[in-house]
Length: 315
Image (cartoon, rainbow, N blue to C red; front, side, top):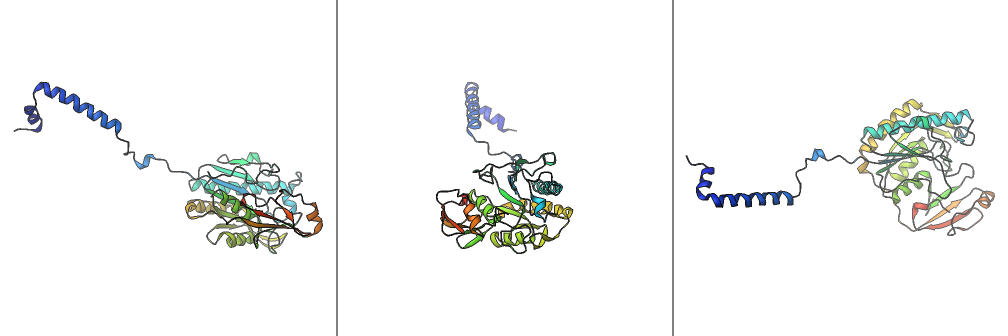
């Protein structure tokens, strides 16, 4: 029986067969070197793990309903020290939820007052914490377009919210109010627009019932919210036990991160006219203007046209 190997041998003399083998081998090597490796199994490629930026405040944390609990300047105040621990427990719960959903790098911005609220020994080793504050630097320092999502933890409703627990906008002492165009905005909107500048969506907000309502009004009904209390007045609230809130935070953070691709950044067309209003002339007189583009238009109000919303609070 004639097989293929013997057929090849009968067709090629020995000398030519040797030269033919060399040529064929050289062509094979060249082909292997020039052909790109397109056969890498998909399972060998590591999935991209989302980077999460958690911005924190204190007034919206479960168990907190009095100004006394939030006063960082009173370091020996036992109510404030307890509030710091409540904050750290909520941060930890959110980090756990993010990790369960496959998050990679996590930054936590200590955003209340001077940024000295985090308790170092209670920091979760899976995250990095940004603490402190420097006048003139952006409050969401460290945020850039390399992040995939922002979570706003422990926030409060804007100034003038009747049922908002410890509600204010940027300053609880001066009663200031911010407007963009004809719409009043609070810290939820301000931080969402800041994140939107970098193309990053806010995917979750936590705080009292009023701030959850404000979030939905500004960012839509699909945003994940966790209610930590229901307000009757500024320092009067029905509280959800912190242990129950933490459980809800873990589940909500996991759900939000798993759905991260369904959220869109918050962006507004610019330029936009902004106004900063004070409740009385004394507060307005005492205000230090931050930008030469700002002008005072009456006894109570400052105005500025913003070409870019990254600096929306710099009047």
